[in-house]
View 1 (cartoon, rainbow, N blue to C red):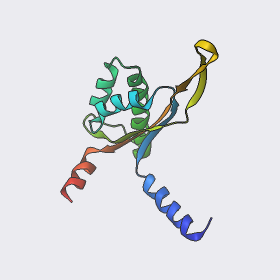
View 2: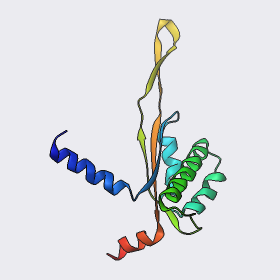
View 3: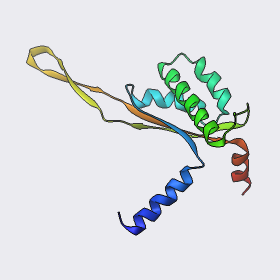
Length: 138
């Protein structure tokens, strides 16, 4: 690795030390379905988002709830204290496509129809609400 690339990587690594995030990869549901649930909680306070996800009847909501709990636990581990209600919010959540599984289904007259089994990756970042207020004032 070159010096310039190593310095850039070190900067990124240093910036990530202060950020609490969680990733979920290769979820066997389409990104479109996951984005519907992610849009429900984007920018919300963390414990309020947990309530929204708990009572949502979408399958993707259960996976996101577990991911959000993991991100909160990561924040607590980095800051060495428990998160209080109203302290954390979901600063960033995004859903990316994962590699697609391509399968064939038998069709009439000897043909085959292609089935695309989609998957996705979700990244969720939590931050404190006072950091949010500092960014908007600056």
